[in-house]
Length: 451
Image 1 (spheres, rainbow, N blue to C red):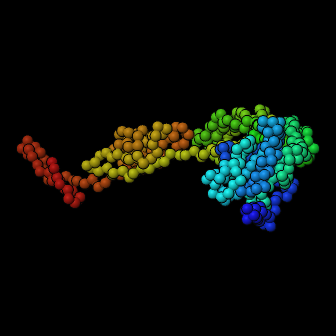
Image 2 (image 1 turned 120 degrees about the vertical axis):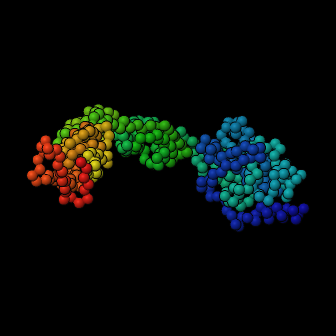
Image 3 (image 1 turned 30 degrees about the horizontal axis):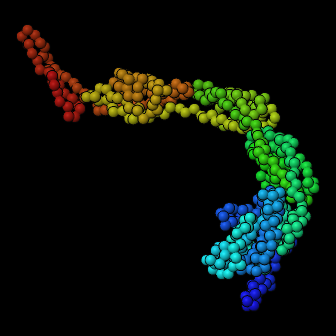
């Protein structure tokens, strides 16, 4: 028996030279643990709800732990001031020795180490079998009893009576609910900018507040903010009081829509300076001013040549939108005429091929000639001609008034043979001389004669 007692004393005190409990007044580490009944518990959730939390770090083999457990101090505290009492405190038993198994909490049957008995029977508060917090809470001896106020400050309360534990609870700063009020919201004037603001007021507590906004700001009010949904948590630095304000929406004005209403491209018919465009904006704050890059101040721009023109539209509160319009230089029709096949004695007509020229329903074609003869197709790209001469194609773009012209020559290939006919000298046809012989000749090589 003496050996067992000496073992307990050694086990209870052996870590005291290595660890020291958390300093009184320090912040308790947060945890989320599951009890032996499968219920999850989050320390800070209890504290932030205003509860004082007591934690009994014990080991199943620890005699002093067993004695204090059976004293009923924590049991009476929980029954009187816990969820089924005045609902002011929460109590947790944490078996913090990693070398013992779950069965040790229920007695010696199945226990892999040693146990003082059935710790579960008759215990009304949650029991947690998890050694993960033993080192975090710097448990230097068994049992270690901590009290944690709702402001997250921890104190080593030790093995006190129910009255002593409740007295500690009463010494904790009271949880103060701050009154956070929305005073004013200024929406963003111009879409896409950051000119909104939120004004709040806070009352209650010590008057020394800290602010945590959803956008990361730590000031009481927000200035120069964009469109969005905002929330703030206010903490009282002099107490455990907090207050929140959520779903604060900062809106913004509709963006200005330039709304182009008409566009007239530059055409050849206007001499290259007849482009025009007009705008009728909407959105923003009606009452619009216009400023073009060429200095014009009207909603329409006319009589302009090819180029890009910028427009800035300003609404009634100074919001702006910029746009631009480009007038392309009018395109002249292209003409490409293939060299025509020359006329010849055996080829009295030829087709002029201009099918590589501009084509489309907007184009009109007209052939004219000097010295030649257009047989057919004078309004097509493939006219048939029948005489040597110069032929001119004019293509007109009916949409832009632009026209182009190009000429081609049709020639004759090969020379016409020369021919001469002579008659015998002194031979005259008479009633007695009824025939004579004619002699044909030519200086053109290779000719043949046919009478």
